[in-house]
Structures are given as structure tokens and as C-alpha cells.
Image (cartoon, rainbow over all chains, first blue to last red; front, side):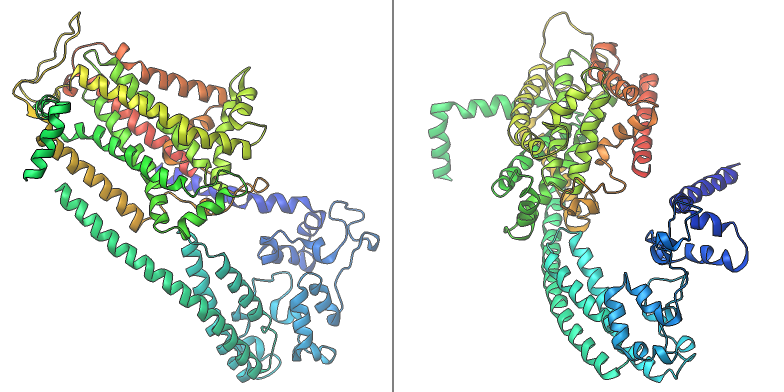
Length: 253
Length: 366
């Protein structure tokens, strides 16, 4: 009996959890129509549901245009429907939102080689099932589809170190923020360095990547030093606090 | 020692302090079997004193203006020497006071200490509890964080469920249709002047009632017998009892020390316990944070409003319960105070505590 109730409860929680996505999906005619079809016409809907775009409320019409409220005019060019872009037009297609990234990509070796079949956005990131970008995208299986992995591995190594450092600093600043410390300035600095770091994600020149990551790490080092100073203060507070607590307990006993 | 003795003598011949000491401190006798639960009044009094001292220190830097309040609290915590400590003592101290007050009230209920012509003592204590809740509510808004803003919006909104005067009452509490600078102004005035003045007066009356009527004997032990109510005033004496000073004062000091140690342990080891993320974000009237919840001592009231199909029923139930609690000494008039001989009362007492905890936990996770 108890097991049944627990099962029912879990089902209810899951149903409630998935409600916002379901409600959102029902709002667009694209999903209603494609979701009801079979094969390649239905596949994008299932893929999209797992994507970072779906998580952030970016739906079909945000990329492909058209009217998501009107079945008849949903795919009408009059309502801005774009459909599937040409291979070489993909960077501009994605670049309408990811402006900075598109510019960096175009300046890099991949972007310059696009006319000759160089990799564009969806080759590495995927299309409808696009996930939050991470260094895991640089991997032997993916890169060796077009070229050898050695240079990519070197770039990944340089980026990984900085990426770990950014995550660690971010975590530390969040911790201090939750303790009431004014970390706005440090957060601002981290934001700048993270942007600078992201700007080299599409760079394939190993030396430039190393140079930039060294620069970013130098700036992050300043934040790390400041965090360490606050942590040292916190440690001292805790030490003195423990002494005072001990004295009060002793007085109580 | 000679200079101190001379000073005491100097004061004594003018104010008779030795006589006062002998009568009111050393000569003030308490029942021999008095227990640690009787110290909670002194604990609350000490914590209130701490709130006043830390409140004054915060007041030196706090700016009661919607544009500057959040920044001024940030300034106190980050720039003012030991400002973080004063702020934490004040904010976490408020929670510890609520714990001590609730324990004080529960111990009085369990031991039936409100009986024996102690209605005034109970009533003033009950009003002090409610006033403390009011102080917590008004103080909650002052940091002008997201938590402050939205918790106050939700709390004041509940008053709107009262028929006829509801809307007017909401506007009166907020000083306008929504929580804003005018709300901050009136909450600030109430928090730092209005309510503390009334509280000090009430504490004075409460202590006067306790002292004048006399401490009740703990209803335990083989010698305890319920006393009949007399048709005239009588101070409850405890001949052969223990002196308040120094004997019981030491016990008071010990429990106070434990409470302060407990409060400091939270400050130094779990400072975020009473501060959700929204407490660190400046108030934004255009951005409602998810899962906004009141403080733990208001969760039962918050959830009660949600349980019933309409808020007015919820408010009615809360009002009926609080009125019943306030008038308990007038309703429960039997002389028996021993818990073992009051099974119905003890059952209701335990069930009420469990219900309070269950509804609060429900409110927290709802």
C-alpha cells in the first residue's frame, strides 16, 4: 500500500515537473503538427525537447521563423519562415543570436574553410538536440571526422585548465556571495574573463590559445588571491568564534 | 576592597541598596524544586537586550530609503568594523529569541504555570510573543532584499482576505497599493521605535506580574499539592526556598550562556541557515523570485492560509486558535497542574506541537 502511494507520489511529482515544458510545447503549432507526424518530420521535436534551446524557451520559430500561432501560415515566407538554411548559411543563421561567437568562428580556420566544406556550427554542436557548449565537444571521435586530433588535443588541454579555474572561482564567489560578502566587482571581473575565454573557443591557433589562456589565468589569479584573503579572514573569525563559543559553554557548565 | 566597600556604603546610605539587595535579590526566594525551564524568561530578556544593543549599532549605518537600504546593509556587512557580527547577532538573534519564547510558552503550558490567578502574567506574555512576531515581520523588510520585499508583499496581502476592511487594511499596512518606500518608512518607524517602546512597557508589566504574584511551584514531586484559588490577593511565598541571587542567578546565567553559544555556533558555522539566496539580492518589484517562503515561525500561518479553500477561512482558523490560546487561563480553570493528572490537556498539547511542526514542514516544502 505504502509502495503504491509512494509510486503515485513520484508520478505526480514527475508530471508536475514536466508540466511547464508540455504547456509551452502546446503553445506552438509547429510542435503540435510535427509532433504528430512520423519519421524525419517528427524527429526534430523529440531532439529539440532534450536541447538547451528547449530548456531556455527557444522554440522552432525563433530560428526557423514563421508564425507559431497560425496552422495555415506557420510556414509562410510572408510570416518570415526561413526553413532549412544552406550549408554555408548556417553560421549566419545561428549568428543572429550568437553574434560574438559567429564573428569568432568566421575569423578562425573553420570559418575560413566553409566554402571548401569546412565545419560549420551544427557539425560540432548538432542542430535540434544542441546542448550547452562545453569542452567535451572537442573530442577525438568528433574531430577526426575531418582531421587529426593532435592539435585539437593541445588546444583542449590549454582550455581545460582555464575552464576548471573559472568554475572554481565561480563556485568560490557564489559561496562568498551567500555569506553576504560584496563580490560584485570580482563577479564583474570573472564575467569579463569568461567572455575573453569563450572568445578563443573557435580559435585553432595553438599558440594564440595558450597566450590568451595565460592572460585569462593571470586575471583570474587576482580574484583567487582576493578570495584567499577573505577565506583567511573567515578562518580567523571561525577560530575566534570557536574560542568564544567554548568560553560560553564552559561558563554554562 | 576598601574603596569598593566605601563606594557601596556611600550609595547605600543614600539609596538603601543593601536593603534592596536583601529583599529583592538574596531575600527573593524561589521554590526548592525550581527547574531549568524557569530560566527561559531570563534567556529571552537577555536576548532582547542583545537585540536592542545590536539594533542601535546597526541604526548608526542603516539608511531607511528604498534606494539605499540594501546598499547600506551591504556596507554594514562588508565595510563597518565588526558590522557583519552585529548584523548576524541581530538577524540570527531574532530567530533564537523566537525559539526561546516558544519554549518558554510551551513550558508554562505544560506545567500549567498560567493557573492560580496568573491570567495577567499569561496575557502580557502572549502579547509579548505576538509583538515579537510583529518586530520580526517589520525587521524582515528593512534589508530591502528580494526576500524582504516579496515576503512582506505576501504577508500584507493576506490581510486583504478580511471582509469589508481587507483592501483598506492592506493599503494602510503598505502605505500605498504596493510595497514601496512608504512601506519601508512605516515598518522602520515601527521596528525601531513604536514596537520596542510597547515591548519594553509590556516586559515591565510582565515582570511586575511575575514578581507580584510570585513564582509558581513546579507541579512535580510527591509533595506537590494543587492549591485552591483564594477570593483575595495573595503573594505566593516559598519559605525555605532558594535565594534568587546568587543561587538561581547562576542557573539563569548558565542557560543564557548555552543559548548564546548556540547562537554563535550558527553565526560561525552555519551563517546561511536563515538566509536563502533571495536575501542577498536587492529588491526588484518586477521580478518575483520562485519559492518565496516566510521565516520558519510564520510557516504554519502561511500554510494554513493555503490549506483552506478561501483565505478568510484560514485567517478565521488562525484567529480562533490565537484567541483560544490568549484566553486559555480563563477557560482552563481547574486547579490541577500536574501533567500526569491532565491527560486530555497533555494529549492536546503534544498533538498541537506535532500539528505545528507538520504544517510548518508542509509549508516549507509546498
